[in-house]
Length: 355
Image 1: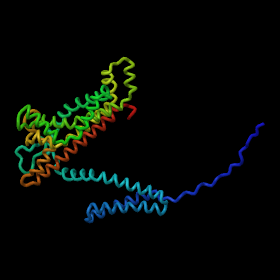
Image 2 (image 1 turned 90 degrees about the horizontal axis):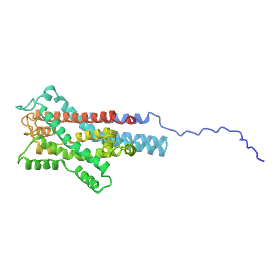
Image 3 (image 1 turned 180 degrees about the horizontal axis):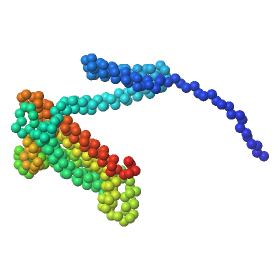
Image 4 (image 1 turned 30 degrees about the horizontal axis):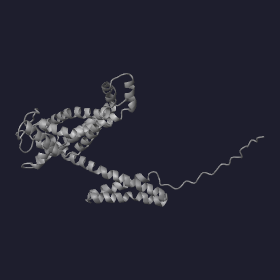
């Protein structure tokens, strides 16, 4: 015979006592105080390093305050937060410094004349970077035309056809080696190649495109390979189950699925090589006039133009140095535009489920 157990009366338990905590505005107040100290000391003539150290010491008030109010455990957490935030700010400082320096010194140079005139017959003030912009765009476009088919087809072979094979392992090893090649070596390779084909003393834009393609191919291979690996195998198996051949599966299923990542990787590879100076200085040379022919004569580019303006400024040196900063800012704007295009392509061409 079973007996029913009835629960006894439920007694309300007292709510646990909350441990004391800092006000919610405490972290913001401490970081705002550190920023005020940083700006005040820097404006008063104290060096930048000393100002940053003083602001960081002010930030340490937060964990000390927390130890007095909240206890050791919460204080350690806030100390780690301060250290991580400080590390992020330290890593961000070079980028902010570069942007501020280039924009502040290059922006006053920008004008309609700067974008529409070359340096032909210009001495001293005046002139522009029209010829260098044309050379940069043409050489970079030619490098992309060379690199993208080779890199994309190589990545397709590594993922779809040679996975696990000895040849694929050797190709990956060579791609890794090419990734670490110094840019000057790529320029010397292109120069030696065109000396054999054309003759000594050769300088032409297509040589610069070949040199940049040597640097660009491994980046394209690696980025496209990773994007192709992200395509689910279920899509391939479903296509094979319908009797679709492998080449058509790659063309119609795999590549469209990975298109956003592939285009993003290619765009970032272009942005990586567009600022190279050493290989273009070796094989493409420098010119004061606009040259639209990649296969004939020297061709100016923005990096080489800025380098030449700084190393050989002429008399007086001021206008040439200003043009160098302006060329650096234009190059920076092009790189930022390429990154923006990569983001837009990644957004609009990604699968609908990933948006």
